[in-house]
View 1 (cartoon, rainbow, N blue to C red):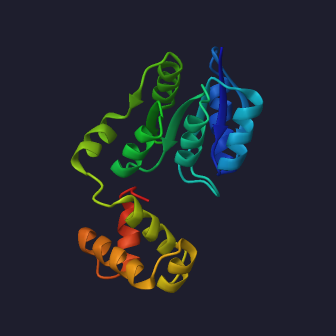
View 2: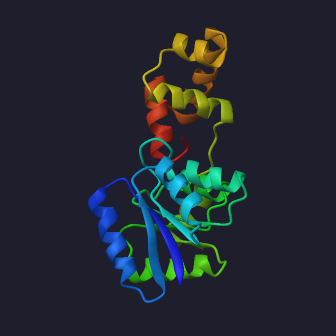
Length: 200
């Protein structure tokens, strides 16, 4: 029996997936979670074989959860299921030790097959995502990503400088470099572009 924790912030989608998975003779959903923190707590409590998680959730994202599990040496394997076919997300997922990455619009049979393969120790990536990942490298440095993430919160350059203990001019320089790399006219456009490509 494959024991699964299911993390998805939309209650209707979470309930539908849980019911579909429980119909499988070799799968049982031992817990569900509506955000990343709940997912981490459920994994710690139930010790599932697989965490099936969305990426974009309140608080910690599915990628944050995968990274946290990897850092603490948790043996639970992570299967990402998402609507976002973004190459940057896939690259970040692989770096976080994720075992599989599939799209929500795939047939349920494909999801169950991916779940079984991940449980068996394989890595599973939707073909269209694998192709996209090779075509789009992330040009941003970790510091540029960090600053653009701050921009998405609405923080001013002065706010960012104070929060990260940097000079305001340094923040401006990093953001200017990021804007140039992304062909953006301003910092907000740069942050939006980076998010759309899955780099934030």
